[in-house]
Length: 285
Image (cartoon, rainbow, N blue to C red; front, side, top):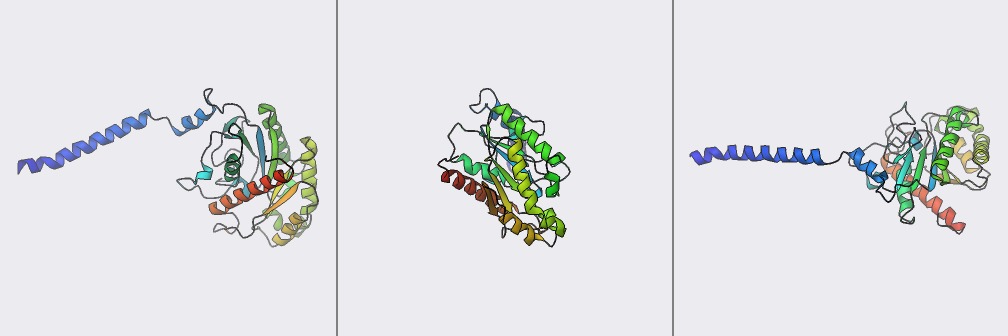
């Protein structure tokens, strides 16, 4: 009977040894931040700055309110050829939530930009690096993005910094905004004119007269005038302004913000719109 009595003790000692070995291996492993930083280390083939840039602007659905599920879906994982411009105006590895240091008064989650970028990376040259420039802030109305307003001026400054730091070019502005303009009838009715003014000002101040702007048609609204804003979005009368309609995509329980599944779909839809636009002009990207 004595050998049988020792069996549980042997099992316990073996378990303790296994835990100790696992702890030792974890100590040797680099932390996640170190793994991400390795993308930009001098030895990395992608240590140079991004050459194709995308400005992310609007309100909460662009900043991202999709649930930060674990594990993250593959299109939200870091990629060695995908960077973002931090609030400090330094290029860092892109990882969600992209707007955590921009939309600082809200809890940010998953948005459409990461899946958008991952889709493009499949078609880019193997040495091409993308740069995302987050600027979106939740709860904002379109007048808050007018020239001279803090949000507009910050977006212009960040866009200029992104180009100056890496010598890259802005491929497009991804714009998802308007939910807050559905509350007041006057805001909804004036949305179209304000959006056209915004596009014109962006192009003038960035010295990009043909700048592509891809706007997202509202899937929801905070007020009763969503249809008026949506109609204004459809009727924007400017060249190189595309509309990707999010209506019908799944919403979270608040019936305002897109779900993670919806943000994934929207990112792919934005990528397809961008690729189709460039293909029609004889350029893949």
